[in-house]
Length: 113
Length: 113
Image (cartoon, each protein chain N blue to C red):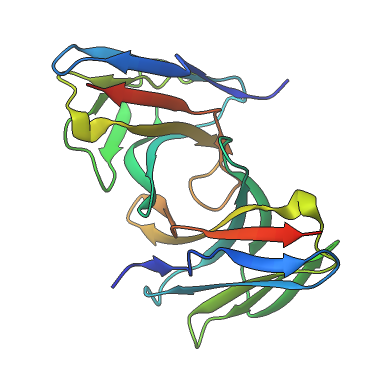
């Protein structure tokens, strides 16, 4: 079982709709959760972080965390063509002296006109 | 401007010819890391460093070496590259491993013939 699992997509949503991206993780001691966005041919950039159960909103983005279900999601409201990218879920757990960031394989989002 | 730089950005080489990919950050970050990204496998950590002279293996360290002689630099060395090391490589840095934002370099696309 992969440590961090995402549906590879592509997830296609029309402009203005809500895009819902999901991620599950296997390590129950995971502590911190992140969503990175990666445009084709570019490096990942952090867009959201969440550390406790519940919702966290930042502009059009909402991250949701449910530690009991080992599930984290990202909602993008009013999706725009510029949101078309691959979204990487990342999870950390403290391992001795270092925190390790483990990435999922990413979900490709396509926002259509 | 705060940034992580990598050189070269693109490299074509032949099997067995030693190469070094440089990584430098100007943010005085303690933590630096190398990842490789392959289709369907996502971002996988190769090596990381918590500070000068402190390095450790990530998930896929075989065939790679690193050094951290200065805080700002973290070169990735392929002593004898093989075709299975053809990949997109990213260097990243952060203030505090895992919990804080990891800033990624622009990537190095390597082709080993």
